[in-house]
Length: 353
Image 1 (tube, rainbow, N blue to C red):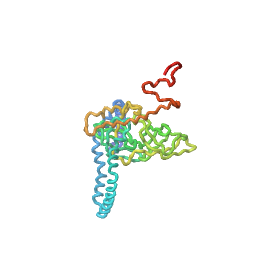
Image 2: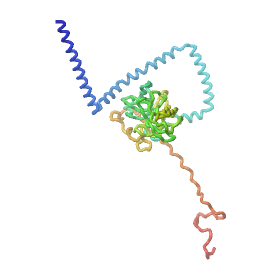
Image 3: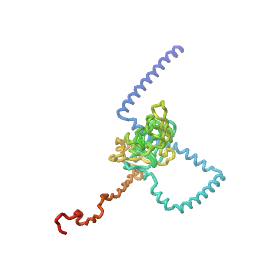
């Protein structure tokens, strides 16, 4: 009886596992079908990202606590040496402050992210970086601005030096940004010197971009500046991206091996900018993807103190000075009077003075 019972139980167990596998497979196909048509998983992701934001803040706090503990337990000798160094630096700074106080005040007004906005910008919003993921397979950062501030998916993110990336997931109070150095990200760029268009792809390193689609005879050299081409519907035309650092050509390879260094401070920035662009500007992205936010991210409420600010107007270039008339005047000709500028110099025959 024991042998019979044991033998009879095994086929039923295998049959039950197969039935469960078939049931789960059918449910997965049905879920994928409805998600393809209704995009329900995006709504689920939106809700989960809002719930996970406090957890992400909690996860990012242990490194700060560890740094605080290390600073609190420094030895007395180290603190004395640091105090001596700071006093010496303070004396040097006092001398420089007295000498360059006027210049420091003027430069302080001109610095900042606001002055780095391109002319195509319509509105901008400063955002602080909460966490940064900089591994070889993933280059992302988390910002403390979300849908309540008007942020939307596919929005351009820049700093005062160059392009940072674009938003890929937006929650109520946070937004995830994919950096231009992420292996899954590509930026349509243009070589400023020659106007040649190509694509810059992330290399998995915050200091490197790759240009894998340039032929070996392409006119490119180290030091060339790469700017956005305006294609793709996300980034405007003409904003700095990177500078070419390496160009290798092989006679047996049809494509050149080109590397570039991003101009943005991807590994040291504390704040970045989220930008809205003018649709009627010539440098606006070719497809107005960024013109209207998603229905999930529409700005309906939020703190008025951290809403997008209007971009400052750009000063038009000064008009060129008028060019004087270069018509030669015969020697000996008297100047024309204001009242009779068209009078002939010689009277006609038979006329009396």
